[in-house]
Image (cartoon, rainbow, N blue to C red; front, side, top):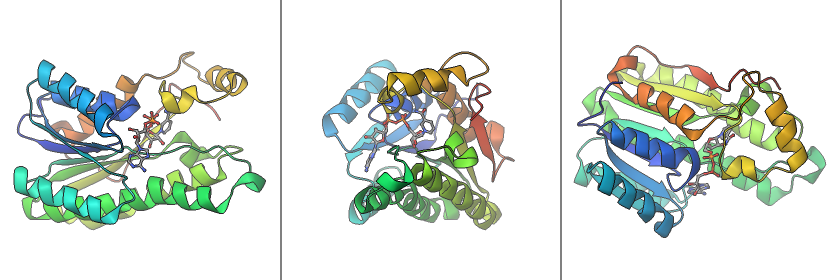
Length: 248
Ligand code: NAI
């Protein structure tokens, strides 16, 4: 695989699951990282793991990604410490499965703010750093639910479909600056998010995967690696499924 030496990449939601594995995978390829999540202690564990194993530079910032001023401050620090940004991985997200009649106003606002609005805001700030460089790769997180929809996923599916619209439009807007914007649409991946499903739902999802196994975070992290590397410099505006042939 292509090395990522000399690249500085920001990953949101890096304390666990796909974000954590992505941090480890990108560090193993030599990238310097900026990791964010809500909890300082779990972020610090990831930072220690990376520093001990790979010795690349890692900064971490604990904040809620919906917090506008903390987001701005994080990008200010990136500019100060690294002077550049080569990749943004908009991974942080939440899943609230609710049938239409059960969606309350708070869940509606939170899901849209975390999954969609915060991602767009991070794209805005990242683009400001990347434009003068005339390079950069932004990787957003959609979902198979955002592409195909499913019962109980009106809200989550809408937020993840919104990511597709944002990805395609940002890709067009930023292409003249050689900044690429793509989205990953994972299927069913083995993380805390999917462990919270009921046994019945879990089995149902597993049975819908043609390859007969749940995906692992590294299956997604390897694609992030490729999209952040110089192997993918002509790929933009794409929504790439990683789902083992899942049918919903
Ligand atoms: P997870 O629940 O294991 O981890 C989510 C991460 O996001 C955590 O680090 C958490 O701290 C962070 N986060 C959540 N809300 C936040 C907030 N308000 N501010 C800051 N950080 C916040 O989730 P997982 O499974 O690793 O998912 C990662 C991404 O992949 C999400 O965008 C999710 O929607 C997407 N995805 C996951 C699938 C799966 O099967 N696990 C399937 C399709 C998409």
